[in-house]
Amino acid sequence: MKKILFATAASALLVAGCATDGTMQRPSDRVLIGAGSGAVVGAGLGTLAGGDDGRNAAIGAVVGAIAGGAVGGYMDRQEERLRAQTAGTGIEVERRGDQIYLNTPADITFALSSADIQSSFYPTLNDLAATLREFPSTAVDIVGHASTDGPEQYNMDLSERRAVAVQTYLNQQGVRPVRMAAYGRGESQPIPGIPGESPQNRRVEIVLTPITEGNV
Image (cartoon, rainbow, N blue to C red; front, side):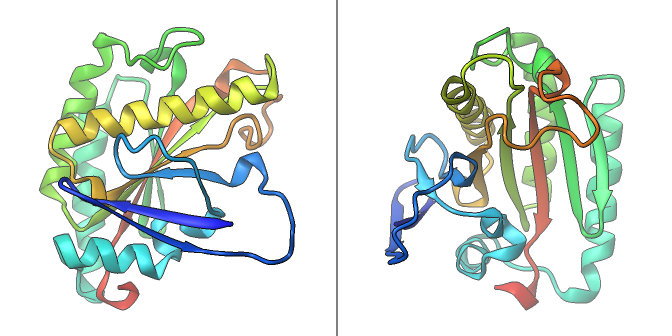
């Protein structure tokens, strides 16, 4: 069973389709979409905004899409703003083509084994929310990760709850729910070259993808 849930500030639309191959959904394929929904639904990496036309269309209908020739400059300005806002915070900003990846180490965002955002991190998230409001034609994928320290299912649940906590906070700061999706990857995707048990793998990644006229 694969389900994708799109949420707006006032309502949620559930779209579902059935798979007939009888395979079990892997923990690394679980995704939560729609701020505060709490629903766990099946999806693969293609559900990231750049690879899901249905989700792109839903976002584009609400916030509008960018003309293809303007995408580079749009993301350049957004990257510049984010680098300035996150300087000295411990957040890493990485540009990959037209996408921007923000790597947020869990130790500066959450207490150990907690999904409650530390109050010291609120100003950084407030700045991020302000930038996301300024650049509304950007989809926001929030991906929680864990180390291999501890039971696998516990790590999966914690990574999901942390991703949803960031998603919910950004929504409270005015980022529209339809733009955001929260994913839990647990311990399935350690940082390349880093041992699975390393605390560096406890992180939340925020992936920003432009919604363009060509993919709505």
